[in-house]
Image (cartoon, rainbow over all chains, first blue to last red; front, side, top):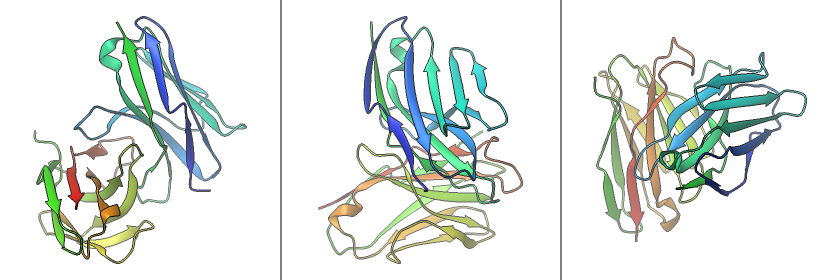
Length: 113
Length: 115
């Protein structure tokens, strides 16, 4: 119940295309769903996050779509650029007062020029 | 404004040895969380320190222990190292009175290799 399942494991997208990464969770107590971007040799950096009271959040080229009934959420990267090539992790957390994140297994995105 | 600083960057240890990793939180942060990231996997929560006490722990054995100092910096200790402990160890800092939305910041990690 503490798991967050992420797919695909890897993704190749042409420059200018749309990258889509999906995540699913079981624990309905999760109430915070961030996406992190990680470059080689660096720690994860927060990209965008959503809470269950909204179905979509957009920040620049990045959009989270959230389906509470299906317990799924996804990251869309519009107009993908080579600089977006990185590993992306979805995560989830419960509002318990403890700031603990449960991460997915990651998606390695390669944007070809 | 310095972010989260971790040391050392890389470390090679032998099975059975003990290791100490260090983390200095971002300025203004009082809470430190440690994560283990195995190769090709997502980070896994080890434990969290606030007010110099461990206040939550993930599914890790007692060989993993930690400490937080009055200046909020933290150490992660691993005893009796196993080959499976080889991973990137990440430290994240935050403010206890703020939600995850605000400033939950990761360091670049310490790459531990056990041989």
